[in-house]
Image (cartoon, rainbow, N blue to C red; front, side, top):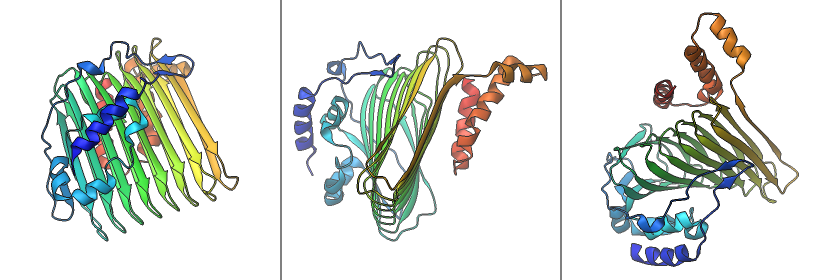
Length: 370
């Protein structure tokens, strides 16, 4: 499969597309005033991963040669080239990434962990995960970087075939001088199930887009947390698109902002007309720890079928001063009291995470940042 054709098509689309607006809600505007695509010079890179005897796992460049048919059938099918100017730029400069294929009827007990350290000042990376029929798999990536000022574009395409199950985790803790653009898209066939978790602590700008397209009786649990301080900016978007009957989605996100950070969370549950007996729930809560931080949470429902159950909730607020006073009156310092309140704020989310290593990583990052 030739990447050159994809790159050429993408460059033409990139030239035609307008720069997207970065204004959300009533007050939040993410700052990209000095951003210029022409200044970005994507670098080639190698992918360091653990081999497995039970599944196919390769760097994307190798997979394009050894598994051309599989790659050709799936690459660019979940995340389309023309979705945005940033996505078109991604495909126009696609260099390498990771390819994972889980064959039919495989129950992979041992999780795969991918430690992705970014060294380049401009990296375009693409992950393609295919879990075939009646198979299950657990995959977590931990993203860090050198002390670089740069740009990272990451697209993760997930394909779950009939009766397939996947746990996908993404912990992002890259440097605070990096602009990070991340898209995770899952196409879920009949009776498939996805547990998706994302944690965002790093980057100067983190634009994160995570959503699933659900076929008949497919299920997704989409959980996430972000913590932003100093001048960090977060644009977190999640969505579940219910295409067929009996599909169920749960989205639960919590965020924390302090100093002069800005954050926006946008969630969407869309029920198509053929998706009767489906259910969707979403919740997005943001805790503000300073007077200068800004945040907004915007839930949306689009319902085209009456025989469904959907609900949503969102909140943005500061720490209750009465609770803070109570804890301080019991001998805690203001900093210790704040830490306990924040941990309590995240507790409902932590209870839903079925991965002890990720829980430990989250708490270590949280305590360090507080």
